[in-house]
Image 1 (spheres, helix red, strand yellow):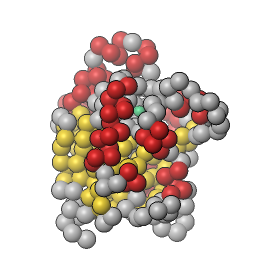
Image 2 (cartoon, protein in one colour):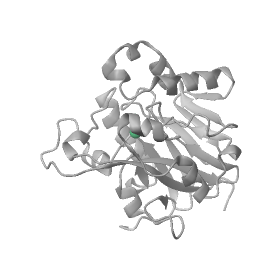
Image 3 (cartoon, helix red, strand yellow):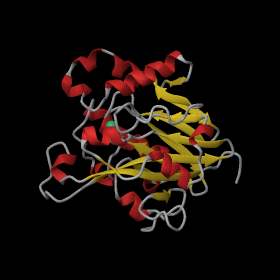
Image 4 (cartoon, helix red, strand yellow):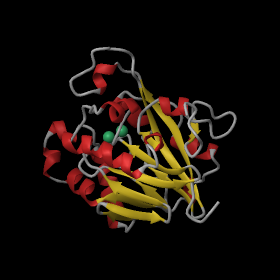
Length: 266
Ligand SMILES: [Zn+2]
Ligand SMILES: [Zn+2]
């Protein structure tokens, strides 16, 4: 493996059963079961493991009525990753399902966009509709990381290590960023909530939690441009990810998938 080539894994930790009209602005005429899965991602390379997003814990799952399937720590352990050893965490955005488990990575620096921190601590949070996907304890925990020198701010594009970069997309949340990773099969893009499901990016449709609709739709083009092919874009909440990509190793089916492997439908 060359110096800037990485392995990439999706770790499923939660689930929410829902119907398709809840997943699109304007609803969905088909009204079928279309659940969301919840993931964190691990990027493994010569400089150790970089974790993308930190998920939520059991208490938050109960509070938000989302099912915690396996604690994030267990998913990392299944890959042999000790959270205590992780030095870099990328936070795609500050919604409750992406930035909980505040104390899981005691040594890590947390990379997030200037615009996301400003959004989550500024005037927009005065409005219930805009603050709904945020939890004040998550935002305060990030403020504390700023004050202990553990936040690393990004503005637009930034390199985490050679072969791994972050890219501001916005749209769904003001400072949402996606992550581009050089792998053995080309550049894989971890979209996070820049596209919740394949159906969003493929159909030009929009998830109902949104800061700026135009940025969401423009963002689909950016994701495709950053990825080696459209098949290299990995949505943030789609159960199909675990169907399309092989398990990281035997026994991890339905839990941890390897994203630098060819997807099965290719
Ligand atoms: Zn979100
Ligand atoms: Zn999300």
